[in-house]
Amino acid sequence: MFFLIDEKYSLTYEEILQHVNTADFYTDCYIYPNLKSFFLNWIFALANDRHIALMDSDISQKEIDSNELTINQLVKIDQTKKIGSVEDLVDCINNSLSEITLFTSGTTGFTRKFTHPLKNLIRKINISEERKNDVWGFAFNPTHVAGVQVFFQAILNQNLLVNVFMLPKDFVIDAIKTYKITNLSSTPTFYRLLFPLKESFESVKKITIGGEKSDAHLISEVVKAFPSARINNVYGSTETGPLFSSQNDEFVVQEKHIGLIKVVEDELYIHKDLFGKNSQLNLIDDFYPTGDLIEWLDDAQRRFRFVSRKNELINVGGYKVNPYEVEDELTQHPKIRNVRVFGKANAVLGNVICCDVELHPGEELKEEEIRFYLNGKIQNFKIPRKVTFVDKIELTRTGKKKIS
Image (cartoon, rainbow, N blue to C red; front, side, top):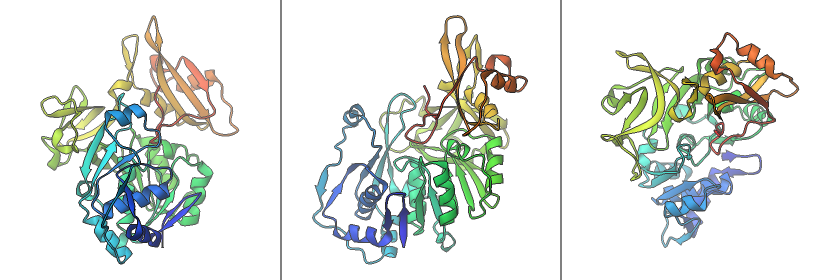
């Protein structure tokens, strides 16, 4: 019974069990060289109630020193648990006393660590006989909270994971067909890079979108590509774990979060009680300003929509430009595969709007055609003044578009 399929290797549940029962050493702070060894070390830790820190392979020495980490140090364990079956292993993980330290992706300028008791990370995992036949497309960074959620959903239901993270479009499509993937969970950027599709995929029963702002157009494209799938658009973070979910781009503050969520000048604030353990939060009256800007749609029903990141708004001659609005329009152009909108300093206006454009293979487009396409769709000051055609939009370690 396979747990992991990757383009270079595979891992069975039986191999995991053997590793847990025979390993002499364990790494408390682990940078993964590949998914196979990463999962083996992590599962060993969970089975033996050990704390583990999950780190990206490109973590810097400065980040290591500032967080007082010892990397890939082998620690002797005199007595490890002996587990008789895969079912016993799953039960052991489900009841583990482990704590897990995750690191933010550094989009706010520096990396912070947050430690979560395992029970907090798995409390919303759906474990049932109905889930036993799920096949997951693993399309998130495994060291970040969304990847952690997929990992637990899969292993606690003894599912198969098929690694498609940061892999080419053709490989992803072939994997969906070959392994009859039922569940896909990734960023809006991942799904945008799959389109356009020449066919739809009936095997996929659930689609989760998270990690970046989504939009109604993208969700409608996802519905067409995966007609049998239930759509789940989620908002969460390394700091809090998953907080909101929706089947479209509108979210609702649940009753249990009343008093723990507030909005100040359109910015989402989250109470410290919803966070993992951390001493580096800059709180205002026990609330953390997330930097996420929202638009209230209905006060009585507590419905809202995410608009932008506060630090990503671009000041153009006194006007604020939301780069996501421009990107949403451009990604609807049939020749455009991906786009990144950003500001460039200008002595007169403060900034001018620029964009990098990645076209679908074989397509051609001119700069003036892009401006003509946007004319009438958005206000004139939001239309990019400089357009650069690039071979590929660079992505971050989490699979999101990299911000300059």
